[in-house]
Every structure is written in C-alpha cells, then in structure tokens.
Image 1 (cartoon, helix red, strand yellow):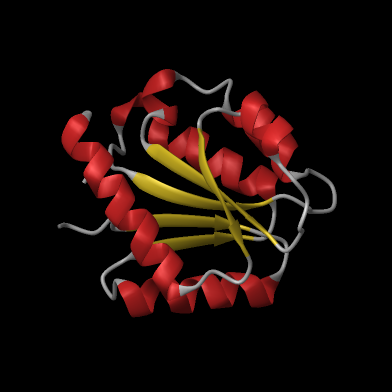
Image 2 (cartoon, rainbow, N blue to C red):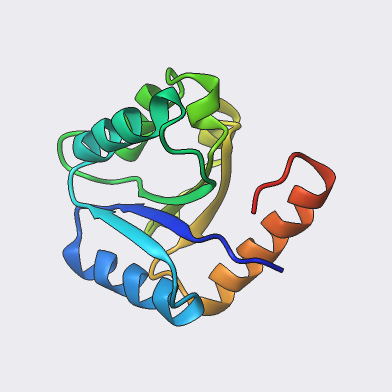
Length: 143
C-alpha cells in the first residue's frame, strides 16, 4: 500500500499541530505537511494551490472544530462551496478534544470522512490510511 503523502492540519493550537506533525512524520517520513493556525489561511491556500489543476494530489486534512474566529464547521461551510475537482482531492477528518456527539454535523457534512479524538495517534492514522486505501481500490484511485 502506498501511503498518502500530503497532509494539511488546521488547528489554532500550536502544540496539537506539532503533535500531528510528529505523528504523521513518524508514520510517513516522506510526508509533506502544511500546518495552519488560522482556518482562513488554510482555505486561501487550498483555493489558490488546488484550483485550476495546478496541484492535483490526494490530501488528508485534519480539522479542529473549536477555534476562535472561524470554527471548523464554518471552515467546512466555505470548503463545500469549492469546485468539485478541489473537494475531490481531500479526505477530511475532524480532530476534537470534545466528547460531544457529532451525529447531526455528520449529516450536514457528509463529505467528512471521520471524527478523531485529540491527540492524533499513530495507530489511528495507520487505521484510517489503510481504510482509505481499501476504499480507493473500489473507487477512483486515491493514492
């Protein structure tokens, strides 16, 4: 199985971003990781770098829900308005320290691939990458 190479982490918590970066690098040393403290900056990066076909690679995006200013849900509201060829390049996972039930949000954002507890752990990352690889063999190639 080929591992995804591109990751984006959007979280206002610098410590969590460093934990994510360390976890991803320990799982895949060749990974390209973009860390964003501001969701607006991540959206601008995605819109500029992934539109027009200039960048065309699958990316796993880890998104915090509770952030000041723009929340993760507001991020998703903007993201879902992007062109299909941009959205299709992403597998989005919500990272949260909350114990809330997100079943209502899961219905509102069916393009979100899953919900994970913080901090991101290597075994969880491995499991989701393996699950995505299995899905990619039945759908269009993801990796």
